[in-house]
Figure 1 (tube, rainbow, N blue to C red):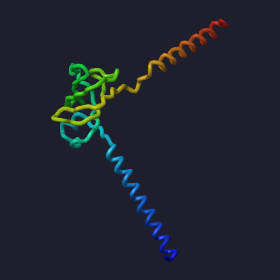
Figure 2: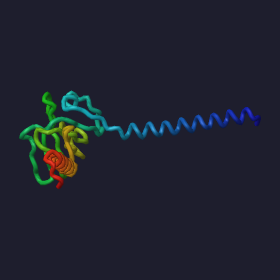
Figure 3: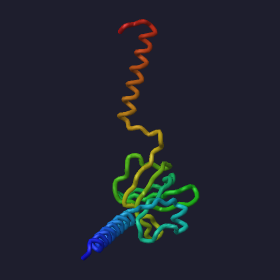
Figure 4: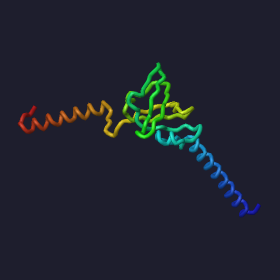
Length: 153
């Protein structure tokens, strides 16, 4: 085999390997993608059949019903409503009238959630961080009042 043919064979082999790797990576991404849909999109049947997706909206007031670890509630986007069923422990931030994201599938008109995430607003701060800031602020005010009065304590 001539050197030129060897180089072409190696280049062709590398190209095939890169193509195979790219195909595998893209296939893995496709199977792990979880899209987000609103209740209006679910009611309009814009969701993929048989695929897991995320449903987001607000928990409708008065809709939460608990039977042991089975919880049912309604998620709304103020236009449409989707009934949700979840078996498990809900997050502490889960409340009626608050935001929620549930991951699962639609079965028979009901969204069967495998995971429920309670949303919080952008002002959320972990309690430990809030306490630390409060102490720091109080300490700063104490130092400034001492400086103003001339008290060296």
